[in-house]
Image (cartoon, rainbow, N blue to C red; front, top):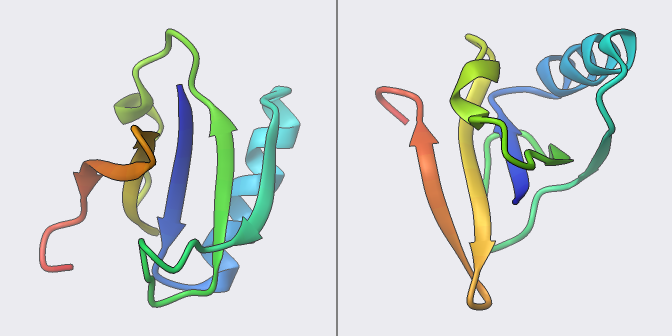
Length: 81
């Protein structure tokens, strides 16, 4: 499962990437797809595989989405966003 994680600000995306690298997770920073629009222009792309992506939620995240049938489906969105 390819997850797109958006953040409220660029710093949150960069910090998440650093932490992911520290734990050996394979993630990359990327521009946020237009279809997801975000406060921050940077997102993290990762392969959630069989993991439950909800276990990786931080206070700096805006949403977690996956691509299905050429459309994004939101798995989780922060309250108030």
